[in-house]
Image 1 (cartoon, rainbow, N blue to C red):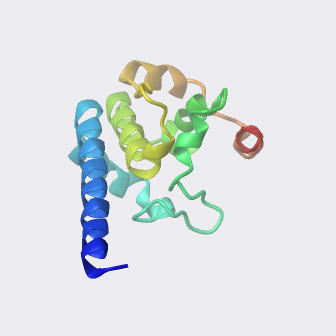
Image 2: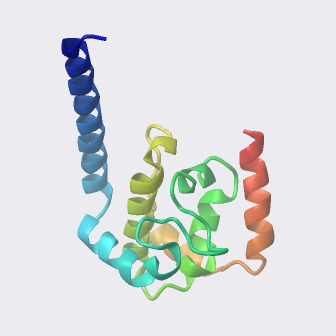
Length: 148
């Protein structure tokens, strides 16, 4: 491949990535207080899920997996009802922002066009009934994801 073609390909890739980043930023600004969500992640989630969502030990990796939960029945509820979310010392609106921010930044490519961001009301309703059998429910949801 000639130098000119490589340069053009490089520019195309950069523009595509820049366009995707701008699209992600636009989506985020529509549904989330981005700064508050990032700070809340650092304060309430990063200790177990690490700075970039990788998870530590038996703690699940959030990267490129969160969006898959929205693709199976019960998965949307699970993300709010899992103990780390349900018991977080955050107002319902702040938790909704945090979950929306995480979904877009860690699994944006898995979100269906026109997906519905969490709202404070939905989070409040779901948090009122936290999960008791987290491991079993998570395993069931992951099994359903594998069938898709």
